[in-house]
Amino acid sequence: MLQPPQPVVPLARNGFILCAAHKTRHEGASRMEKKDIDWGSLGFAYQPTDYSYVCNYKDGAWEEGGLTTDHTLTLSECAGIFHYCQEVFEGLKAYTTKDGDIVCFRPDLNAARMADSARRIVMPPFPEDKFVEAVKMVVKANEAWVPPFGSGATLYVRPFMVATGEVIGVAPATEYQFRILVTPVGPYYSGGVKPVAVRVPEYDRAAPHGTGAIKAGLNYAMSLYPSVQAHEQGFADNMYLDPQTHTFVEESGGANFLFVDREGTLVVPQSATDSILPSITRRSLVQVATDMLGMTVVERPVKFEEVASGAFVECGMCGTAAVISPVGKVVNGETEVVFGEGGMEHVGPVMAKLRETLTGIQAGEIEGPEGWVVKIC
Image (tube, rainbow, N blue to C red; front, top):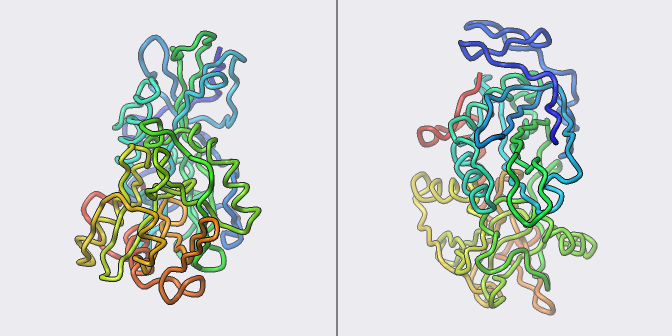
């Protein structure tokens, strides 16, 4: 059975963290001194911080939950996560804005998506309001680890839930643990944003009407082998086609695709087999394009033959880590498609503007829609 991590630090009534190792927060108090880190040299790798968040599900209910300094899990060898892959996760970031505030970007959407993911593989959804409060709690507790504005670095926030209860027959577990780890990470593009090349693999990342539309570790396990192959061949990622007919564009190993046609329309691939993850970054970019940049946006199935015919002048992969990773070319066997005049040399103007606008909103430099940027402290 699960051994609970120690110690768990509860919240005070006023919402501030009480812990000897952490300064109690008061209105008007000065910011906590940042950790002595070379923020500019950070990569995208795990580094333990002061606190994680933990909450257990047992006897049909979630406990109160709280902070812990223990970054390990001790599980039974018969825990459901090991045998039947009951695991879901999310990814978001905490930023320091131009004004010095620490904020997160649309954590309510991560909460809702994680709840949907949990239901799909018969896990108890973590309450969405509690999810948002837990994100605020753990980010505030690790304030000293949030990189300063202008460094290009951020605090990566990884909520996840695993089946901890013992189960030997094929069935859902009865006990679960929800955790949030945070770690400072450098910019996805340490050398600046540059176009990348992708390929169409011979493998699928999901089954038709399977679990491709949820954020579960099992989907990413499916993509590991073709991802390693792609990297060995000099590609940044794969462009997966639909698992049913292998004719429609779906997504990469960890991001959604966007296209721009010759008329300047933003074309967003849809899945007829419900096997594309509903990216929060993609959803936000679509709204930015429509409401702030005045673009025409069309969400529809996209056949790869359209891509091969040269119908699109720009392509990008969008997700939390890079916001937008511009794609310069895609290779499918003997077919090589180069996007626009820039190709592998220059980022297309639409992808550049979309990325600039969304990152500006996240950094507090551009005013975005109400509720998108949530202040932590």
